[in-house]
Image 1 (tube, helix red, strand yellow):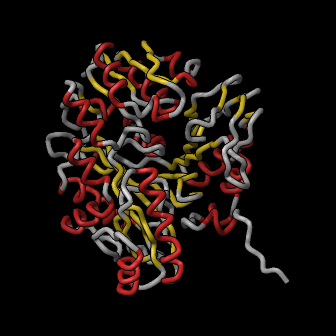
Image 2 (cartoon, helix red, strand yellow):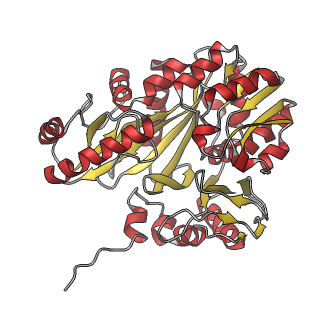
Image 3 (spheres, one colour):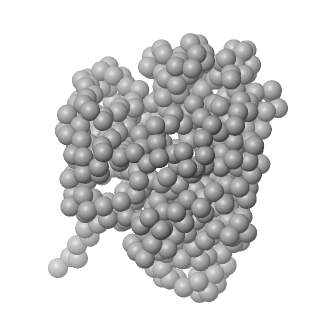
Length: 452
């Protein structure tokens, strides 16, 4: 096991990793931008180093400076958390070249799953179901039009290198496709440095369900049940739960088998997630693979009793998984909500100073956050400021606990999405356990009206 690691991230995930490392007796090195100098994760780490100015491209994405700090601090490994450089194959490669262990899969695996087009091809070869679509990039509107005519509408236009919904758009006709293509391609080039676009058939009433896996470097792969992540705004998850209340036991076993098959086919190791879209008849299709720890990993920890960060560290240090698929029992139900510093109606960021702050407490309640009264929420980073998790022996108990905890949550000085979250977990459709990716659009976004 490592004696010191550098955490190439910030905020609540940095604190989350620090917590496990403290329990295991591993020293931690934090990096921070000038804007985060007084942050809790900086205070909690054993050592901390400033890596640049507030903009992410001058600090948290400055791979060379981060690796320099790792070397001078004596860190043996780098944990990337999620977001930022966590799925950057070049960063992983630079870590290895510097003699550092990258706590994640190999650069080659990251690169292969980073392209959604290549990932589609790989999963087809592995025998994993994929959505009807094309497996080549579209360079212009003419190619897009021809592909659209072959597949048929409605379609999802997607950026191959995309994430967080950037460059992705539902198109219902050839006219909509031609209007959307250039703009989405340009956004993909701006955000990812890669404007490759492709098309997939749109799945009606889609459920977004993912399987968490752990795999070691000795060929062992274990699925850790599934998570329902269908409630999203702007294609970003807002509420997650485990297990899914929608799928049957038969579908569950098939999805777990498919996830294991996918991971073994590419020789995957460390923590990863196979994401699926599931239609109303419970047919499921590969969506993408996240080659890192997920924001929503706490709900899996709550129903399995595992510490996924600890398991990542063990795998990265060469250990075998200490459990098999049959050893991981499903215990109860867990729900996570993401708390954002944002206007709860327009979903726009709401930076500012937190003037009062109080976390909810109670049986089955878990908080993941890196803020306190006096903290400054800056406009430089993702507006997610905390996560709230509730566990219960039953889904109903978890629903009741998450609702009460949200009502007890206190944040003043900035706007948050807590009112929207309370409405969500109180909504009849949520309580029934049938939520699709259209939930927010259907129940929260202002409806267009026709002028008379």
